[in-house]
Length: 76
Image (cartoon, rainbow, N blue to C red):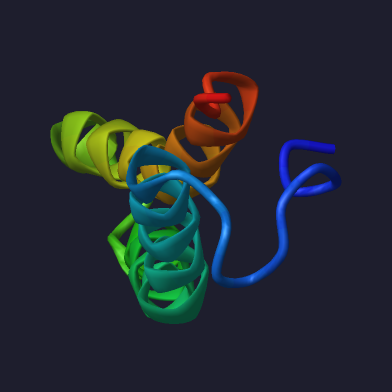
């Protein structure tokens, strides 16, 4: 893991910024995901609303994918 070689006080500032950002997204991103999924399901199932439903469903993927991208690009 990225933090195996450092203690809580010895990690690089860049690594700590990435980890803080990841924890913030995990903490505050789940309401965004739930709201986007609920919106996608609660919009009327008519052709007129299909674009809004697709955009809402895609918006629900942003926080988890952002966390994955940050985890895969953790600095040393």
